[in-house]
Length: 310
Image (cartoon, rainbow, N blue to C red; front, side, top):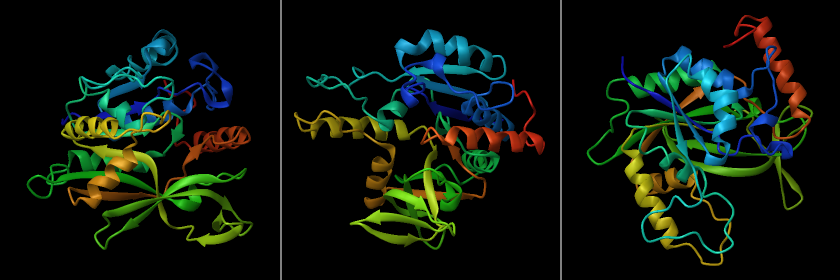
């Protein structure tokens, strides 16, 4: 069986709603499951055979006790640590900088433990089974995850239907995907303040006007499939990012969508978009908690998940 890893970006977990740490994680499943448990369960079912958690050193003890140790009984687990000080030689943390360096650095932190095709997800998003199956099949399929031309990368991204990713309680930011005729990504247009109208159409506010979006558009929810050589790209890109960083900039981030977009513009990567019809769940607003719990309970009642995952 080909090795495939699921990388879960969890360095910021526990901070939502001012929770402040791992112990404050919200339970959503009938047996106390958190959203991440469902992603791990779906990944294992799809065929992923290793989990890498990206966390901070300061949360390691609690994370292992509450999450990592029980998951390690089911599937091999490794850890990578995203720290502000993890910088290339010759760089230091700018004075006054407190904000982490972003999702690009989070994945780069895995460079010592990930040497096989891997998927990347957020810790606090529910993606559904379909996306895990499709991304895993891409990563293990012949002539799909090894590049289409010499010197060119070939990655994938799970695409979700816009109307399946919106909150009932306010505007959200989504990356609207533009594809070519072969279903490959041309660009991701970050679109802010997308809301639902009474008829279910998605619109967003711009200059006090409402602009209608296609509710069936595919959007990025930060679920990617990469080959291990992407680590070299991240390392070089992070150095370039730091070299061009304004000394007064305290919050700039090295982000996966920005990195991928640059590679697309330079024609150095093909990205296959894998559409998923599953409904995405996430907690953007406090009011979303009850809806996510209800949605997961409905999946359990329908037999999609057992009452107790692990």
